[in-house]
Image 1 (cartoon, rainbow, N blue to C red):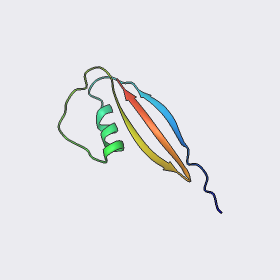
Image 2: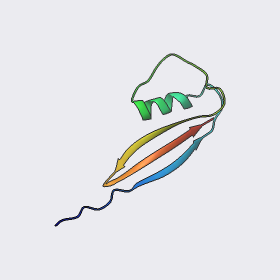
Image 3: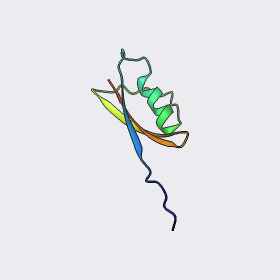
Image 4: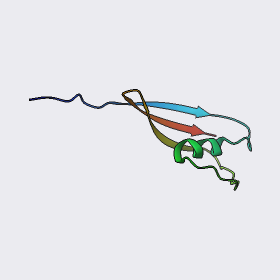
Length: 67
């Protein structure tokens, strides 16, 4: 009988802070969804997105908050 290791996911919380109209939301949409939009819509308050990435054999969950 063979056993496989339990897959673990590391969670990293990242906070991006900056002035308005600098492209924080565009950066997040590009990273998480792989798209870039020329349409501008201001983010009101705080927003976050989650991206899953692989680094070697490890899975990482990026919890990205931006204000």
